[in-house]
Image (tube, rainbow, N blue to C red; front, side, top):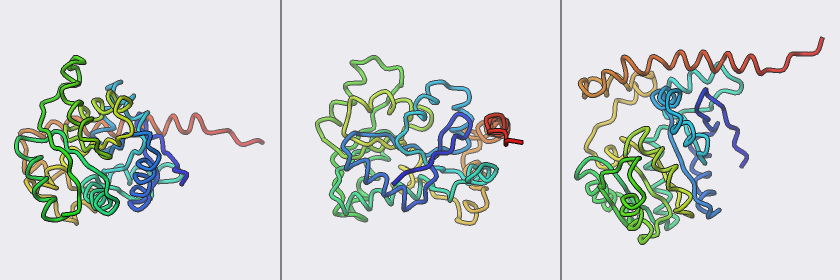
Amino acid sequence: MSVRRLIFGPVPIDSVTMAQALDEVERLVAAGQGGAVFTPNVDHIVIASEDSRLRRAYARASLSLADGTPVVWASRLFDPPLPERVAGADFVPRVLERAAERGWRVYFLGGAPGVVALARERLRERLPALSVVGVDEARIDVDDPPDKRETVLAPIRAARPDLVFVALGAPKQEIWIDGCRDAMKPMVFFGIGASLDFVAGTVPRAPAWMAVSGTEWLFRLSREPRRLWRRYLVQDPKFLLVLGRALRDRRRDRPVPAP
């Protein structure tokens, strides 16, 4: 399948449906060349506008899926718009279901203490055919020296997973994946953030109507106001500036019709 990619300011986003995204993951596994799958939302786009390392990670992404409803809405100002939201919290369980069907080996890295082990137990109950070949709660810094990074990569390499799910939060997980993916082929890496908490059942998801209405962030803010207020009330409104620049650049680069 030929995937059309929308350049949304500093972040490319692939114009795919959920079903097409799952097929693209299957293609990446079959190709055996490794890869990185990210799920950008408003926060990722704002951070990428200020962080060159995150921009580089996204520029090399194998698959970039619109996680946020506001991102899909904003895409309607472009031609063509994104077909639908492919939320990480919905996408990750679907990928795991396909992994169980195809016999793909999976590995989980990161998350809060105890969460990754709980996720594995929940998956054993829900998807008994799924092969979880390793979990690791390692504390990771993107600036770790090579020897410390190798202590994390060596167990992954020994486990030989097809898919590696990394829950470090943005932008750490994307930058870390971009720094190690080439050395870990043919593994396909996923930046999954809070989706690991949803798999483990430690954090509830917002009601469906909030996801559809683009107010899911209010639910998260109400649950963790001290941690998230700056992100949602100070940082994320900069998205409007990023969007404005993206539209300006698109108009500037558009060919002028012949008279």
